[in-house]
Image (cartoon, protein in one colour):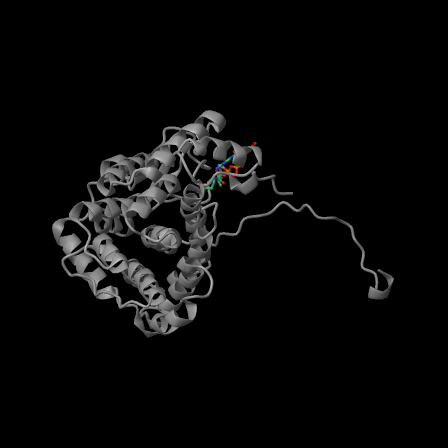
Length: 375
Ligand code: COA
């Protein structure tokens, strides 16, 4: 009989990877050997994509090459365009986007090619297409024309341009760029693990990332950032009401979204940067309400429950201040994480073995069949 495994596979090593590493005790996150504190605010999302998907921080020539490929690859074709009017207005944005991401394979010239070279091309295109698809979804549901990307801008600035209709200031674009870097990869999180399980059947890149979208959607994973914002907005009146709210939620046995982590036993290093950005945006926008509330909530939850904020907690007030609609917070997470998912699919395909764990059977034994009229 198989040994009993920990609930939720906690602490189980499910795969080998050279893409990212987390030290939960020290609160460290590393992308290919670089500490996230070394990278955050210093590299662009495009450089991060190169690091995750191609293994190194790019030289200028490599960055120019990747940028050209991303520009060429962002048109997502007729299938997703045709589906847009159907998926807008039914269900949540994450349901719609899961469908659109799946449809991207229909127009992908490498869809049927399972070679590693084709995986790399698909990975670049998916990263380029993801912000375009989210922006197109937003434009379609608002009945607006989608602004053309500005060739002078990177992925982060172009997305803000397309979502808000205005070119962001350099600093606002830098802040969002840093958000994309911070969310890009995080070892065997649920969506990445899902992508690797799918890839390990020798299924294709698009199937793997579509599965990952489904996993990311849940409130215990990427869906938490949206839930945090809804929580902050639901607390009326003075910031002092945060204390009562937190205690009432905990007394009722409910979880507070944006707190706790399976791996980190101390501060999530991404939260450190997002807290700083939330503070800066509070000053830049002249609207400190959600930053101040978040700081208070952080303190009360730490004092009463000993839980630290995770990546999703301060991401909520940051995205809100950037003008991103609340129900697009999780799709924005997906824009960034697409770089990590695709890097993991390539890595899985490069050295594949079917992922097929055992299970612990808890049902009855020694049952005997009887005809239906005698049961
Ligand atoms: N609010 C209140 N209590 C929490 C909590 C939270 N956000 N996160 C964990 N806890 C408590 C649990 O109630 C449990 O208490 P108990 O032992 O008294 O029953 C204990 O801490 C362990 O929680 P558990 O859910 O078993 O830990 P996990 O490792 O399975 O879960 C998360 C990790 C991230 C799923 C969990 O912390 C959570 O649900 N957080 C909120 C959702 C979220 O922010 N997700 C984004 C993660 S990046």
